[in-house]
Image (cartoon, rainbow, N blue to C red; front, top):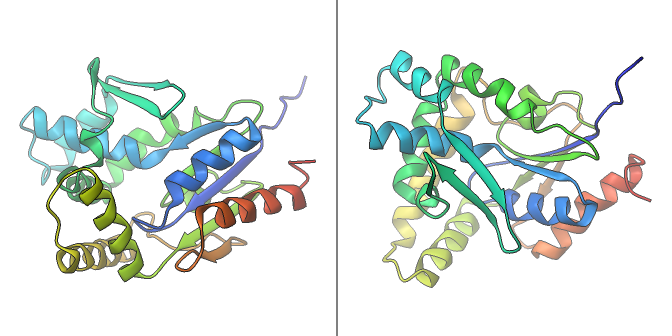
Length: 228
């Protein structure tokens, strides 16, 4: 008896492109599961930080990634993320954790340790997966592949507004510099570099609303026969 194939939509792109928000809304519209792959790397980074693991030692980071004690608990507002039973939903979104995550994500052993964990999210009725290599490495057979981008200035502006809304100090110039550095690191790493997957639709969201971007994803789903 052949297994039923589970449909997948991948949304890849650089930090601040809006892929997380758009993937979440698309998944809600479709009634599908959601994979925020970046959270797994951020969780690995946070676990390393909390346990005093040297992130310059690949084998040490790999051990952390293999034994992550993680839970994703969906609720109405957002998916609650638990690390070792502690709610770290907001902590993993800090700039500091994001920077560490960008470093540990270049390690081949770490990516392999998290590979199957990501693929296990593929369950009926379907999956919307966002990250940096969803369409190129994790789900190369995805039904719809989107590469979402925006100018570095616009992405920095969005992050700046988020931080200010949270009552945190932020420098727009420093955010631009940090994002540009992260883009270069992600695009030029040997393993799973950040780039559009073969056949991906490239969407520039610089001058686009979230609603418009979500509609593009849903329209691609319709074209692929995933949404009536």
